[in-house]
Image (cartoon, rainbow, N blue to C red):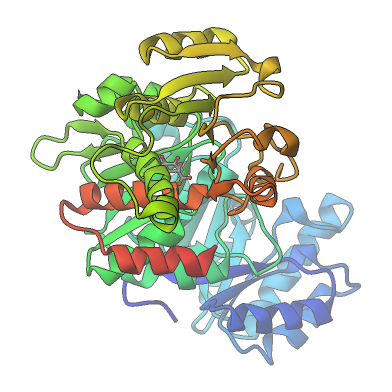
Length: 497
Ligand SMILES: O=C1C[C@@](O)(C(=O)O)C[C@@H](O)[C@@H]1O
């Protein structure tokens, strides 16, 4: 049932009808589940224990039969409790692989009856802790009490720890094989549940069968984080290089608190996304001079010899080189190209946004000899950055009317136009005619409305995908302390987007 590291992928099936339950079990099998949890409390049927026979007898995957009292549709505590006992007893008679019992139920029933009247069925006792962040002592006591019931396996659902629930709990599933977890939950396609990975992502992206106690953990610290394509790029690349690493989405509110909590040597490297790139500087023990001058870090490595956090910026080179390459390509077409100086040099470079990515772009453009004009919703921030790059800040409301001199570049580093708001654009189509090249750091969608409209009015458009892949290449080199397989990573990005 389980992969070689002992972890099995389980699809929880919450269905109302028998037909739906049977069909979902087949779907779970197709999508790569090793085991299903048949959540009997979710069923709207007159007699649960009879229906159970029709689910369990023809099953094509091993099953856990659970009856969570809290999710029961049965009204009245007594009726619900009796149904629960009937279901669990019938599951034992059917020799199902596992039954799952709420801790409260395990405390009330005569457990010996269950333990003695079973063939190979293993008993999971589960508990849901919903009281903020429980202390370690409280959890230890709870675990001891749960073990005292005689359970074969105990399951603890805690916001943030163990089977942590909600979007922040996703890593409790993805890292379970590293920390000796017993089951990983994955959802069926088309039924997203916050905090649970899909069965398909477990099989195709994370490949938990390769994860073990020696696996190094990498991840993208961001909020929001679900849009990040980092996992679909870095995970296959680790495997391609024969490197034992996993890269996970980390939904983080407070980056300083994050590093206080995840301080172990196995948490080896991080991408830093919105809105943490500026705050990330303070979290590092050392910061690379380029990142220091920019004042933004998008990559953090935990140095193996002393555990110190070292910050880098791979956004700057990624964005500027993508724009330079596009300009050079055009020039080759027009006049055979120019050598030596950067094609950005001497141009007006209009930047929208003054956050982490914006700072990297502004410093890069200044270094290449551009004249920088910054528009940002927070004008004070635009002014501060403009001062640092000897540029000019203009009020955000004047962006639409702004007409730069010939040859100007427009770069959007704000999140305007990012999914799910892909119908938005920071500038009208009409205003885009004034530029020579338009770049968008947003990469979801691949072609933002801004880029689409730029192309429609005949302006060269450079996608954030180009910056994304280049900054990821830089990151990957830092992650593994070696070279990155550029062709492989580019191909992956082209296939996945
Ligand atoms: O801006 C980005 C994109 C990113 O946040 C992501 O979405 O994966 C990862 C960051 O390292 C990078 O600087």
